[in-house]
Image (cartoon, rainbow, N blue to C red):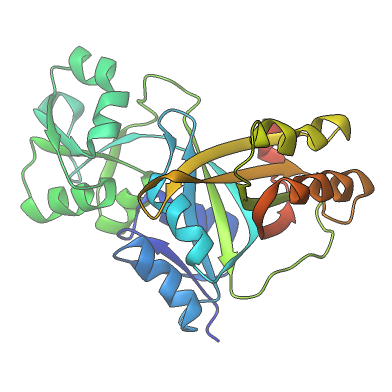
Length: 280
């Protein structure tokens, strides 16, 4: 199997940045869709997949939560990546020459103060790296892109303004997926366990199911719900907890959860990223 890590998007995307920062020794493989990214690992064209699941500003990446349970892959790591937004332009162009900037609508909204201060018109693009590529191909000195520094390097653009986002805390959490699970305790910051479950159709089932985590002192860092197969009566829950399934407290909590649920599937057991708590 080739030593590649797959990601969704064009070269220079923030998912590409996550691959380079987390696995610099691996070749990054761009894929058109999240489904293609997962398929690249399942079919052996890549060893790992880097997929975004949450953003501190915009919340969850909805498509991924629906794809994970049926992906056939397992979570083996997580990565937190700071989203720094930069103004990219053709080589030699000055900031006062820029009249418009292109990017994904979310990034345009995050740089509103900077763009208004410099009188730069916003142009919506399909994505960040694609906008950088379009600016490079168009060759218009008055047009810039909002994207990562990696996108600038990829498409031969200069960074004429660094880190122009309005808020300096925008972070995306990525999950690293592989064909085989790895339950080995590892890392220096504890372990995380991610699982999905459906509660039984009894009164207060969710309340009772989650009670075991509280009574056993297990910290649940994430709980998401979403419909299954378009049904309003079948709700699936996605959860992250701190700890390993073999930890006595976690094992007791999962046993209690099992009593009140119709299905539990562990999606992965992996080391906590030190940046989870603001370190690194």
